[in-house]
Image (cartoon, rainbow, N blue to C red):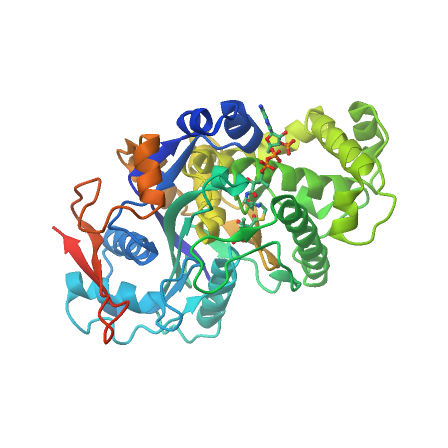
Length: 463
Ligand code: HMG
């Protein structure tokens, strides 16, 4: 039985920090954010929003947009790394909020869990729910996978440049209008690592930034090797002489902690794939220098410590992305997927799916016929695991993609002053004192502090 994504919705909170304001206050060149990282705006939550609110708002959006009744939905999963409770799962909060609109108990049948593995957990949730559908367990019902996160780093840290907040909901079924997953090719790579992690009780992560960048690249490449094998073994893709598996994937969506990471990762994959092909000679000629090799391929630490190699490697990559060979691939397969991320920043679990949403809209806008085109998804979560899977755009995709307008979907936003940003970041304002008045949205009213009910959260739907 096929399984895939029938529809996708995005919810982005209505406050943001502009990269230029941020740079001027932190004494940085704005070009470091805008050009170096690809960050123009970072979405921020209001004082009365938490990741469960974002998840409930996007869930309501996709249900209303598709005129679904609670009985149509068989499963609701929420994937997040911004968990608000060690035990109570975020999908239960979402059910509670949705029942304020649809009636008490109407989602009682709708099972699910909260999944966690940094930014990759949404991809595991999609895979598990696709298999629930493939196994015939869905009985004609939809599964909804929501990915919702608030990326928040310590003030003054280098991670502070890559914050954001938002949620994406995906509606899955056995006759999708948007994308059908390729069967038996989802591939994972996993390793116990401390590139980025958030110990229990801490509200911001501990990050080894450059280490995390390199680990992301290595893990995604490992997963691609497995994908390549599976794609050939299952007969999904036949890789001819002088070809790479990437020649058979029309569009790539990458996990985007910042939009330029997508470009870096794409260049890394191409570089490794092209290296053994006849075309590599002309690419290296165009780069104008020999590809550097590390003195000691020991660990990520030894590679990062090999300064001479790192500098040459950086230089090589900078030149590689300027070659016509790279630009052709980049413009054809990746560029459209990076656009929404520059407006929002990192939304952890949701970043990969915002990139998919972005690619659909901007490719469609440039007149591309997407029907039958294969999308490759490169998911990465710190800690660490990568997952690669793919799917093909369905014949009736236009029905879903035609009305897409990410600017309208994000809606009118308010640019925070730097002082306001700091107040929100440091939780100096309470939920009962939000920056914005909202309507038709779920908001957090309060968090109980009494010993018996500590941590209980109350939400309302603002009519
Ligand atoms: P940094 O070390 O301050 O920045 O932090 P940098 O020195 O690496 O500079 C960044 C880029 O800006 C470089 O581009 C510079 O050249 C350029 P590159 O050369 O690499 O292409 N640059 C400029 N460009 C134009 N004009 C200028 C200028 N100055 C510099 N004046 C870092 C960067 C990403 C490490 C930091 O922000 C950080 O630690 N972020 C958080 C961790 C992160 O996002 N890691 C990404 C991979 S891990 C991941 O994706 C998982 C994650 O999402 C979590 C999860 O899974 O849950 C994070």
